[in-house]
Image 1 (cartoon, helix red, strand yellow):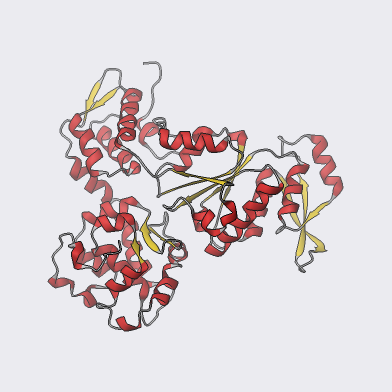
Image 2: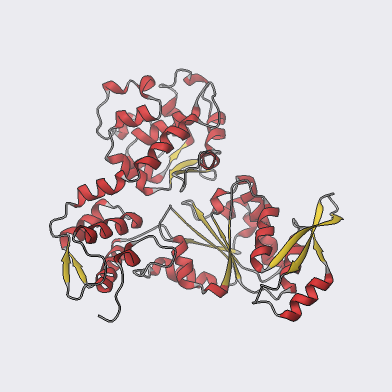
Length: 437
């Protein structure tokens, strides 16, 4: 065959776009349409569901700059990262802003080949100074170099809620005062995150849900992969993938790669080869998920400890329903009120677990996972709808293969919940007062 590919090029987690990338019309068309409208774009979804691949597919490398957010960043840090990605070098100025903060000086080094030498000389002569918090100043700096690329903000969910809210207000200013367009990429499951933070963004931001993988999408992914590698998965394998992976595309990719490697297939075949004739897909999924046990175990143990010891130990009690409540309820998220109703009769000091204290802890869920270096994050609290959501679909699948008593023990909940008297089957959702779910 003319084009020989490695199995890892097709099913692996390389930095480049996967060779078997498939167009999901409900996602890709929405993204392309949003790019053409001159608005800001939000791409959201669970962990490893194709958000970054989506923008890599439809944006050329010279069409955009990328800023990856870090924990603890504020607006100044984001602006500084944007200017550096645009080609500026930054140093402190002796001048102060009206609020008493130090201004910055901008220069452009000789290595910035996309900026003309004349522009470099002009800016370096101007000794450009600006207030790093000012949208007007950032826009002015970008206009000085005739900047016209998309600005991609990755890992937006790792910013504090306060910074996310601040940036939602900054986005409105960018829309009104310039033609700069931002693409915000984050791990959450609601489509109105930014507009809820700033209602003025309605009509100025388009959200694209990259989380959903339909059966047709998975079929197209498998068919494309077969063509690239000149293989043919058995029908039983394809049906098993769609039944057991539950639209977790990362897991689909992993299982397909293991199926090929089990037959010592590592590249495109010279002759059509049938794959997975004797594969026990259930056991393969179980085995693949076991490779994530370290991360999920760390989540249960480290998250439950919280930031520091407290009397109520709310973080380990937040984990309890994630272990026990039926998957159907967890897929849609559970309200803070339902979590409290679950906790109150079981907690040694349940009458002290107020909704105010609980919501305060839930609001810090992402920050705590960052603090414990749990990446990608497993859970996220939607403050707009007051629901705790699992954004890592692999966790629910992994949970289904685990002994529930052992999970309670990992979370240091076995004594309180008397898990020795419990069985390991799925909890009856009627056991818990979740009528509002």
